[in-house]
Length: 99
Image (cartoon, rainbow, N blue to C red; front, side, top):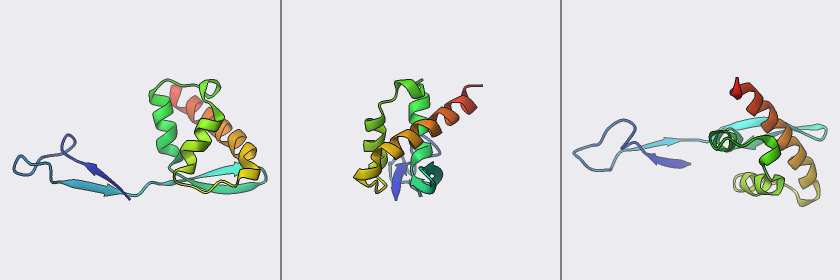
């Protein structure tokens, strides 16, 4: 669970930073090899890359794997399949948002 301060978003309570908003990070379905896998936090990661103006060609696959591993288990023997699938998924995400 991620806690985010609402201070700048909604309001302060008595001038103090004691209001918090909690949300759960969502899952995205990604086709990895022949399997459809649920990957946690992918939309948030893609949003960060998009906000930085990064295209799929500019993203280092191993770096993306490292980021995704923070919230997901990725077996070492199929890292290459995940890397390929995540890059393809980001290409779709980027193309759909750049319009």
